[in-house]
Amino acid sequence: MLEDGELARRCASGDEEAWRVLVGRFQKKVWHVAYQFTGRADEAEELTQEIFLHLLAALRTFDPSGSLPAWLQRVARNYAIDHYRRRRRERSMVVDGEESEELVAVARDTTAGNDPHRALEAKDLAAFLGRVIDRLPSELGQAVILRDLQGMSYEEMATILEIPLGTVKSRINRGRLELAKLLKRRRAEWSAVLGETEPWNKEGGEA
Amino acid sequence: MSCRRQQELLSDYLEETLSPPLRREAENHLRTCEECQSLVESMKDVLSLFGSFQAPEPPSNLTELILERTRPALFAARETGADLETDSSFWRSFGSGLAAAAVLATVLLFRPPEFLAGWSRSVSQTAHQGYSLGVRTYHRTSRWIEDLNVLRMTVGVAFENRLDRLNERLRDLEELRRRNGGEDESSQSGLPWERPSRKVAGPTQYETYRARSLS
Image (tube, rainbow over all chains, first blue to last red; front, side, top):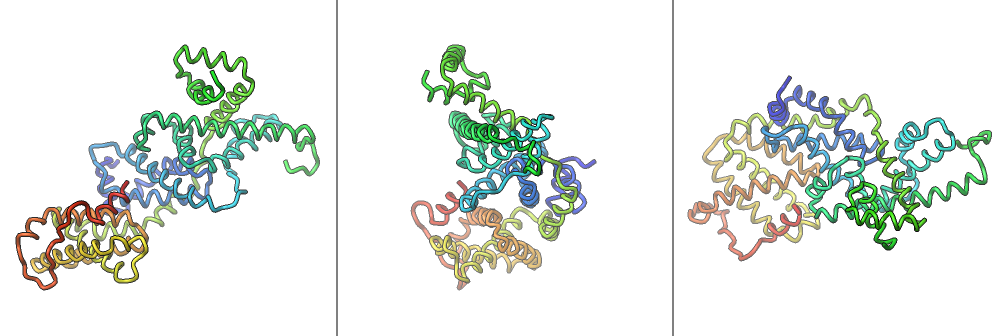
């Protein structure tokens, strides 16, 4: 097995075999980063390819005395953050209506259990969460993603975003608070709907 | 404790990082405030949803998609990388500088984009000086094929709107100019296309642009 420094050097000089090894070794990690920042499989697929294109160009700057996985993770994450900001600017022009289908499926599998009432609610809430996080102010959205999906520490975030620690904490709290308020309101709406009908008992119902 | 203060501390409260006195205050407030208590529950749900979040498996053809997408860049790296590896750092800088200067000259020749308008003059001078330096060195070597390879790669990169790569080339060019600054100013080569170096106090427009673009 190729040592990381040698692998990076060979990839940077265009060695196809080495590049195939590197892609195979790290594509899943990069995919996860991409998915966490996009919440959609099609966008994550595109972003993963862009990240690898960027990594290939950046490999010349890799210091062989450092850790290649950590370096790749950092470069991929930084690229995803930039992409997230760009996308947010573009999306401010786009109408509502898109849902994160994968978030819906994940929520159904992981939080609902066998209770149809909870399944319906969890599905709706997860879809709702996927939508609203995309509509938070970008600095709050990225703070929540980095902390709650990427699992970064406050200190790491302060470094990567180049903002003080207090600002990091404040952004995370404000982002979560916005989501919590929206979730609470959504729940109230659902309660009202469920009080009137029980969709999972209706024949030919949407559920 | 006010509701506003309570909400500012909500994440710290749930992550249990509040100091004991503040935690007691928060708990006292929550006992009497239904609104804040309900927000705590909602935030717990948000964190729980995030906690259970898992990205799905990547598509089975992802490797092939990535390899296909990166093939031209890999080819370009192979074409230029091996040659550059054996070059001295001077040659690497020279190649990059020459290519960047040529690309910039091309871009400025055809209706420069709006964002270039402000600094086109200083960039033109930079490009011209880079070109002059390249020509002087070119007369000392016959390795023009390598330079053309670098140029080809950089033109390809520029047409893909890869301004970040272009910036790298510009950095190389600037470094090269700095290193050769003494020579440029002290020696008069007498080449007809060479102009004297511009001497301006303070940052040039180009430097200001670069600082802004890198920030």
